[in-house]
Figure (cartoon, helix red, strand yellow):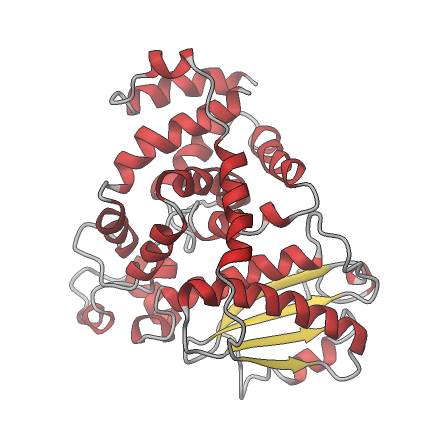
Length: 353
């Protein structure tokens, strides 16, 4: 792929502080293997059974499937509650591929539980095509409370833990729930999400309403492409049936779906946002995001990363969004400097394999 050869000198010019001559003499360390082993070790160390959660189940959902779903989400919730110990109850909605009418009945215009405009019908969550799928999402209600929603098809194999499997979907979506709470989704700056989006991206700087949200939009509207989905992937893929194959799939997606735009994808991970018209792609969010979070974990560890997520819940400055301030405060280096001196060399090493 010719773009990689073109991208390297351009990236090197942006990252002159790195000794690339020395870097290219030595093969990259086996970062991901160590990180994945550490993540799996956490599963044995920090569970906190007893986190409260509220279950909403579609009528007629098979009891044996429900038991399996409850076990998967219970394990994932206790994994994260052992790290954050939040007092909030986790709402979990479970339904099957034939429960579209029921879903519509509990998401009426008069009482919408979620703020998202995401159309589950168009996304293929219902109908025969979803019978073998386990699909999940996290959305927030009008108060900013995050809800986990999952559709589990009638033919799902709960013993399978490969790509898009029920065990991995449970871990991924549960990670998002704790991200939402950590970053303040239930505070005033996030509850009126449409106003937060407007003030964050489109309002005149002198608009007096900006002060009503502490001068910032909800943190979910001002984070880099690589952060939230990449973080969720990092705490999901190590528990897969073949984590090396799952990781290789993400790398394949970068190399084969970006055509000649590798440099563009890499640059998207730096400053562009996860929402709004900012050009984030699935490759930047999930695939590059996984790799960047691998290096973040390798450099700083799980506890510091959890501190970073909690620190995002703060006002932004006139020049920096809250996540950049939290990054510098938590890790002692600016996000830009870390990306240039640590993340980019790691990414180049991965792509050179």
